View (cartoon, helix red, strand yellow):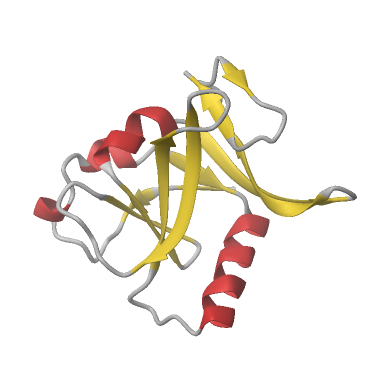
Length: 131
């Protein structure tokens, strides 16, 4: 598994707190491979990264958000993992600290799975949590 570190190409001023980004997320090799595959399938260039976020909603109060984005916002943490750039907004960092993102396949389907040690409750779908 790879742990997120600040993007070496970003200027220090581009990251509000580079030290906080160092231990923010862990992404398994399978998840990195699936992100790369999806980027290629969508025909997205090197300027795109995976935006990982937490938004209000879901049956437990918060839900995870994943999408591709080529805009780095002023408050984003930018991490580089296995050749994949991750973008995390400052509000989401408090909920994603220590999270592992995996990609799993089962009889029920396939997709990204978030393993969140900070979640006090999760729902059956695995997409929402409370902290």
